[in-house]
Image (tube, rainbow over all chains, first blue to last red; front, top):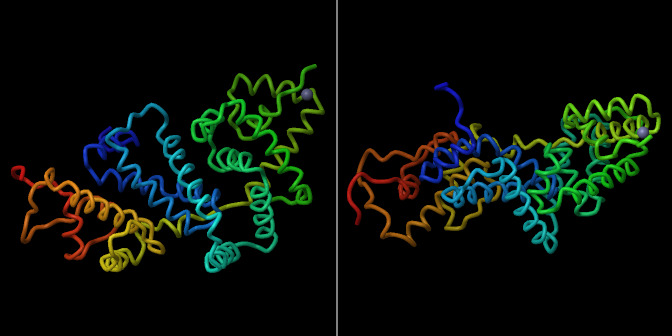
Amino acid sequence: MENELPSDSELMARLGRGDLAALGILAQRHQNRVLSLSYRLLGDWHRAEDVCQETFLRLRQAAARYEPKAKFTTWLYRIVHNLSLDQQRKAANDPVSLEALQADTEETARDSSVERHELAEAVQRAVGELSERQRRVIILHRYEGLSHEEIGEVTGWSKSAVESLLVRAYENLREKLASYQDFSP
Amino acid sequence: MEHAREIDLIEWVAGRLGSEQEKVVGTHVQDCPVCRAKLHDIRKTWDLLGAWQVQPAGHADVAAHGASSAVQEERRIPLVVRFPGVRMAARIAAALAVSVLIGYAGGRWSVRPMPTGAGMEPPPYFSVLGFELGDSFSSLVLQDEPASSQES
Ligand SMILES: [Zn+2]
């Protein structure tokens, strides 16, 4: 079909040939998922925005060498994942700004009922209290919808490691959220 | 009777178990109260986790207001590749423009001479990202546009 949207791989090939319009389409198509993943990993929109910007710059740099072996989004997630980890390491010595915290709180509070807001905070806290590896697999599995193989590709861990991390993570989350079991989200 | 693997129950709840496996697990769960209880717990946890929603839209607003003013703002920013606090599309475009300029400065030999005078068009990705450019910014960006004639 003539009007069919170009695939991500086609866009990467065009970008590799210097067609920057292709990058615009990729950015529009994927920036929400890039931001969501990065925000969930980092808990800070400003840092997530930095990661998002850097991700698309990396895309441009890598486009000429890009080979569509894995699914494009898996490859994209790997970039976001790694950049977010870099940010996280930097952030360890750099506390979240008060401004960022306030902005996030207001944003959530504006369109949520109190209970829902409380639950959302409890969930975010529970996920944040998991071990680093469990936290990452839960975010990629529950919120980004990645398969075990894809999570393995993104993180560099084996499929069996991913699966046992997932089982433990869901168990831990059930315990942490036990007091909300009667709550229907 | 062998119980269903917990990871399969998780995938069942996630709706990502293959149809073959779904049948096997489903048949077992129907007859096994232990696995049914586990499945119930996992589903509950799964649903609760759904309460943590994030809203990237405000942070990735490509077409909304302020795009051209964001670019105006960036014109005054020195050559750094980070633009905190500016809308995402503008940030990506501006960071790209800067990386293009740096690439140009470092690799003049491979870039053809700039066209001068009127008829300078912003590169296509700017309109795709939803904004227009002022003249003074376009000269920065146009470094990446292939010109028509010979090598320098
Ligand atoms: Zn059983």
